[in-house]
Amino acid sequence: METKIGLEIHCQLTGVKSKLFCSCSCDYRGKGANANVCPTCAGLPGTLPLLNRKAVECAGMISLALGCKIPDEIAFYRKNYFYPDLPKNFQLTQYNAYGITSIGVEGKLEYGDGGSKSTRIRRVQLEEDPGRLVYEGGSMETSIYTLIDYNRAGVPLVEIVTEPDFSDPKDVRLFLDKVTSIIEHLEVCDTKLEGSVRCDANVSVGGGGNRVEIKNVSSFADVEKALRYEITRQRTMASRDIEVKAETRHWDDARKVTKESRTKEEEQDYRYFPEPDIPAVVLGSEFSSSVMQLMPELPDARKDRFVLDYDLSAHVAQVLINNKELADFFESALKTYHSPKEIANWIVTDLMGFMNEKEERLFEGLKIGPEHVAELAKLVDQNVINRATAKQILGQIVKTGEMPSSVAKKTRASMIDDAGALAQAIDSVFQSEKAAVQDARRNPNAANFLLGKVMQLTRGRADPKAALELIQKKLSEPSS
Ligand SMILES: [Zn+2]
Image 1 (tube, protein in one colour):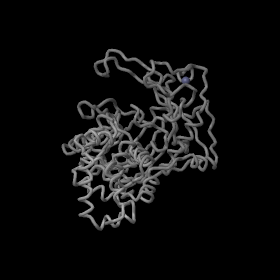
Image 2 (cartoon, helix red, strand yellow):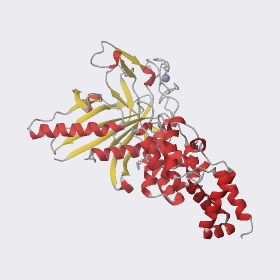
Image 3 (cartoon, rainbow, N blue to C red):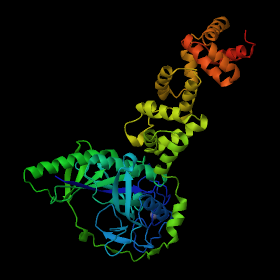
Image 4 (cartoon, helix red, strand yellow):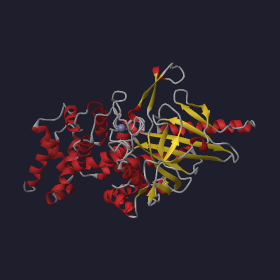
């Protein structure tokens, strides 16, 4: 049975500081209820909306990054519905039924390994977020009343609508990861903030099957789970000849099921009509090129640069850029100590093992920063500690935040500090590594190899600094 999945992704433009049609702050998290509200976003009669230029630019950036065309002119429509989260009883959004008015159309995004898959983007539109309904006790079913917080009403929202090009929930996950990385790189949306990205998914199974919309999926990671559940549900129904109703279902995160919430509205129920208080916005032909100039480096270009400039494998580069925080961490470590392959290796093969499984909270609970990993790589490069010791140290410092060098010192409490014993070990290495000694007399960098041998011989108990000094002193003496 053929499965078709389409997505509607909402991302708040948290990079824009004020609301879409008034100057109220968008930063509502942790604020008192209804603290960021003015007559415009409260929907009082007689107020007029004023479009936020920065929000249009950010939506333009997202459109271009998703390969969309930007029309010369955009407009806003009223989507009418009576619901307490909308103080005006309509939402200002964009609508393409009577000609293109949305900021982006007809895009395409490649994703997956080396861009092996692609999905068409139907449109990118700019709209206002509704207010937030707060259920007493936290649950819609058991709450006896509902509180409304209009702080979120009017926060600029970009909706990305894809064509139903997906058939596998796993691809949906890869696509969402890529979108996340793009909007993080554009710095238009902080995806780590709770509720800043939401995803609805349309699913139909079998050619004639009705479309079911899954709403209320609060994390991209859960979209894949919700889709798997829904596909199984619809297939089971089809195999028993039960008709799948066109409806909206909510994802119940606690029970990991989708459940019926209401019969889906038809488009005509919304009675769309052009917003009379906002004239059409003429962007002109230069808008795209000027927005293009504002755009920072995007994930694909960054990946290519990592491969080219840092000589990383395509796989390692991809793992790093999948999450902007990780890629930034890597490049920041390089500023402390420039050893790209070594540092990338530490991050991808070792550090990620300690990270939070929830991708949007990678570093949660970890006490280390780029400087820790840079120092760890340096200690290994310089043979001060071996890889096995470094791994143990990493396991400790992710919890304590201590610098690797200080842990290395402490764990070598029984370090050889007796100059005689150290000299003896060095003598022995000079005896057994004659060729390397010759080499090191001509090339001072080769002394590190000898240091490594001394560390090996003393099982890491020698003080590397003192040992290196002694080695260098011995190298400068005339050879006997
Ligand atoms: Zn306002």
